[in-house]
Length: 305
Image (cartoon, rainbow, N blue to C red):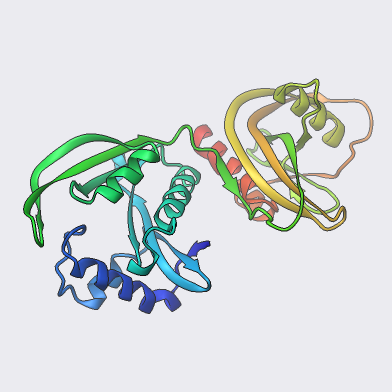
């Protein structure tokens, strides 16, 4: 199964699924005669991140991710899901749910809330509970079911602090080496960020954690070796997994990385192993090779603003 961002070429497939789902009058509040433009616009818009799930090259589901409410409540996400009737029971909903939780965490949301889960939609309720959601409220007789009349709807919620972010695509045809790593967002007085260039990528300073090291001690050592700088860890930014393919080593890696914010204490003796460049946050975002490093920069920018 492939889950990817939705595009204009998916509009027909999205409409086919949408119109079939709302025709059932058992899960969504949309009327069966909802116009096509209303149905399509529900999934596309400037503040909407929409994704589709494909099986054998065919779109069989979609979901969208948005802020639950504006401004002071925008740290909580909301998501909507639909699955083609022919794909029900094939794990599409679960795969999209897991994907949505990771995407929400990557977008900086701290929680996800569903405002209107129809109580009689037991498959959906059970799925969300299995993914960590709790029923935090009941809306009495809030949904007019097509065959059961007025039924309750649930408000469901979960925090996202236990979601480990995953970036890149895991390989299915080769051995993958797990590599614990530590990287730092290091800023100077001008709020420029240090990046280093290795043989195959542009990265935040850092690297592999040896067996006898903590994440912080490995980070300090790696920055000293790579950049000839003494640093001190200031804040923990979080953990992320990055799947990487090294063409030079003909190997696949699962880099389980801890990202921190660090400050420079001074220069160290000895030549640096890599060239260090200091870039503005937007330039650093555009320069780093891996999505996990870009995520760490964005998170640092939010926490330090």
